[in-house]
Length: 246
Image 1 (spheres, one colour):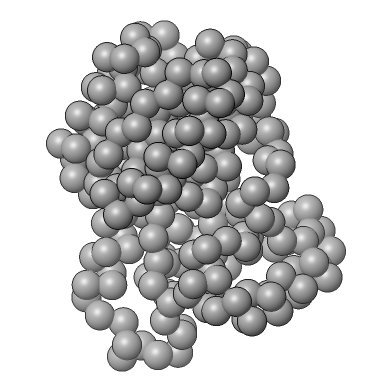
Image 2: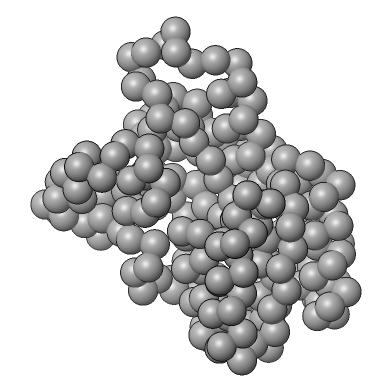
């Protein structure tokens, strides 16, 4: 996968998968636009220092992905600095931990918050990047979840939101082809601060052991559980062209 000299914008880049993705692409010689929200400014500064140590171009872009205008400004800032945009990875995502059988505990604001970031935010970022990518081509990767297929996960609104990301990806792939290729990845359980903070470290530890006992199959591709600091599998998507394998 040759992304040396390319420019990637990573949403939700201050922590977890976003941080890991930014560092992985930077190690391959990619310049990074690192998106974060105000609440994760400290973490974003730390990631930015890690990126700078890799001797690649980097810029911090604060934006709430639920705000369409903020997403357009974020893309403009990235293109203004680097002169181009080749890759968008939509890692920004949120959840709330609500037992699936506790239907009365799910509030309207939970639906609005989760769908706003996970689905609408993904759409906002893709739309904002379209014109910058169409001139020379590009790649978009949306982070969904196995919950989008199984209906499981931290809450019903979360599972629904990730199913929405999968459907959105299919629609956008048709609309933006052939100049821009759009794919999604659907990770299973990934150990990190979000899960540890939401379900608690003891439960997180049990889940980790259960996933490690799983064998590869339709619901557990590859088997085992992931960690946001694990070495990423670069075989995302398929096809030919300058971004094949991304």
